[in-house]
Amino acid sequence: MGFSEINGNTRVCGLFGYPVEHSFSPAMHNEAFCHLGLNWVYLPFAVSIDKLKEAVTSICSLNLVGVNVTVPHKQRVLQFVDELEPAARIIGAVNTIVNHNGKLIGYNTDGQGFVQSLASEANFYPRGKKAIIIGAGGAARAVAVQLALSGLQSLYITNRNQEKAEELAWHINKSAATAISTIPWESNLLEQSVAASDLVVQATSLGMSPHVDQVPVFPFHVLTSQHLVYDLIYNPGQTSFLKKAATQGSRTMNGLGMLLYQGVLAFQLWTGVKAPVEVMRYRLLQQFDPK
Ligand code: NDP
Image 1 (cartoon, protein in one colour):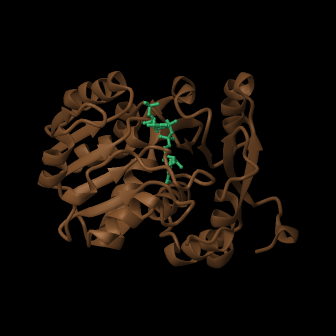
Image 2 (tube, rainbow, N blue to C red; image 1 turned 30 degrees about the vertical axis):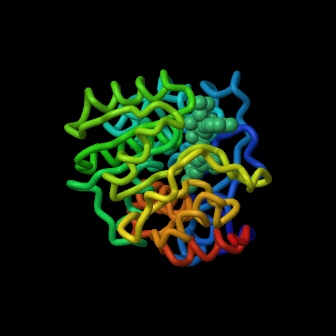
């Protein structure tokens, strides 16, 4: 349906963030609603930090089905929802809220989106596998927790700010059986951790457009065709990190799949309907051109 068909029965969901102008989510979700003929609409809401509480309260007052939550609200919003699903609680961040008859449930589909993209696009399942993650910011946290909850055997974490890596390790240790070790930033120990890993996740912002030449210090020579190397960055589509990994024969993936599947999972939580994944992927790709 088009906007001229919005009527009294239209279900409304959206995005709370600040800013929201550059988000790809409205186009992705509205395309999916349109494709399935659902009388739904997804709207961007620019919510400043001091208005977050009021905005969350308005989900019930306005009878919104739910919202996505993005920067800078993902952590702060935790205190305003009624219930948290386990991954959101352990990650300490919410990116999706569902309005269940006036009760607001906070989910985090970022990490689940990452794991889903591994399964759907690389036939890679974390159970029993070993991984190393470079970075310990918000995205790394969601990915690391979800890998651990998905049965990863062991995880190495390295981050410029070592304290953040230690804190993340401690957090995961409380909730999952995965063996966690932290590796000092740029240390020689990286070589053996990478050699022992099946999956390498680049989760820092180094290499993100426009700073496309930035790359974390990393022992690329240790990579082989047995490694799957995933950069969470989706712009550019192929970072310098992925290019270097590819020259070693490793399989590589960019962050588009994580972006897509976090949306797919949110869509399914709100509508209860199977999301049209390829329609959503196509709409995302139309919005930028991964090289
Ligand atoms: P955060 O700001 O929370 O974390 C940034 C991370 O990058 C930290 O680990 C930080 O280290 C590290 N970092 C930044 N600058 C440097 C530097 N100069 N040298 C070394 N390390 C550095 O950001 P997010 O976790 O939200 O995002 C990280 C990346 O993931 C971004 O590129 C983002 O685009 C991508 N992303 C992708 C998503 C997807 O759906 N594909 C979703 C969300 C994010 P330190 O702690 O030491 O500062």
